[in-house]
Image (tube, rainbow, N blue to C red; front, side, top):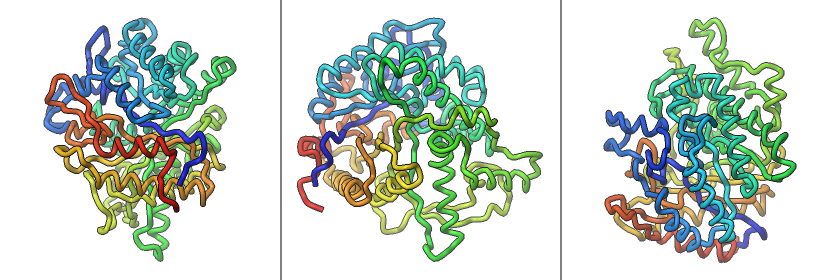
Length: 469
């Protein structure tokens, strides 16, 4: 089961989740610093990323892990407030610049291709104080930050992700309020944030295209989170429609404007308008793009980056109470099949990734696809033998192979989440997705490979699985 020649095998991390050094060497506070320091049990056991894996001082240890696996690609994110403490280019933190230059240079020296995410949930607090993603001013701030990164690192970085999982960020941070800034705006905030996230991405893509592409010859996209939605009753038209809505509100909400025509899916627009009207709003709670903005947004991605973990069954559920909220707008109920195995919040549905890839191929004109995150948490954190978890990885690779060979999906890269056990947002350190175990009780934060790491290294060496399809 050999994958195509040149297929990329990677692993991913994100700045706040691994670096620590939250206020070291002139770094400014991010929203996650503020949020975790406020306590109030919003994060598991009030844990913080103040130290995390200590990667800010232990980069060489991370590099050893990368080399041990034999990765061809390593995806990491830049901490915006480590580089620009107040979020603007008014003051540039040279030590932050040095840190990321060293990572990039060390990777290239060791034959590993860096994939760099500009922004992975950790907005500078100074910009959140000015309204964050609810304010249109953020578009200009993000574009200036992106230009700074392109000009500073783009001579060596050729694969960029502007924004990690804008769909998750919009809902968790600005609709439900369970991510910082921690203030819910049910049914309005998520859409406003999403609107600005899409425009910020598009602006930065155009900046790259007009100012840097000719010389640097890189590629720019954004990383969209997507699960697969399967109708609970395949014979029910309302369940089939609900499953389509689930995918439209999750994946297509961002992908259609950027890859197709600069505007939201029709079903999203009509559903939110219908709900808004029923609830007595004078107009839809979903903002509209102007014709000029649609032209600016359309076609602003050079590859399709998707992040898949799990799937759900979907059933139509009418919003009878006319509650206001993103989830209520979609009018559906999601639940797992009772037969699916479960690790933490991840139900193991390897065939879901194949269906999702086929959907992306068919809907988005057969783009080059990168899987920039996929993984499973380790069920027993005390054990390094995660044979069961490895079995789920193996099943996933079988499905990817089928997607490439049978469905002719143009998949070029797979990145496991994550290189290391790390700070998993509101779950703190209770959820371990690493290929390497990190002992968070030990100040030295030793990294030790799980069985999965050793098996993944074999996959990379063989460019695929030994068995045949």
